[in-house]
Image (tube, rainbow, N blue to C red; front, side):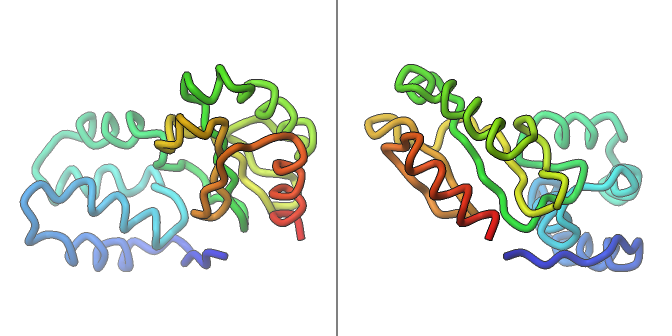
Length: 157
């Protein structure tokens, strides 16, 4: 279960400095910011733009292009359901709807109690054993309604 620090501009500057020596450091910085704070806050965009001498639009473009960068902190558990073509063809649409119904929130949202964030993911590389999902980094293939219910119960415990 992840533990995130509250937003701090000073801490963000420390995280940025850790990757300043890299060539093309924007992506590692964004990942580190998300690992530290649980999301990529809007306040980091001008800080990164200034530090990297690029425009705010360039930073914003990267943050919004990649689905894994969150704008709000995630719940205690993160359930990612594969929405790629192979998983959709193997029943992924129905499983996504089932998860939304069971959790009471849409893909991309967190349950009201903050326990589970359910997100779409676009390919886990398990097309031959679709549909698939991932709970807190643990990949589950050959997903069906029963197995999904087990994952959801695990996440809600």
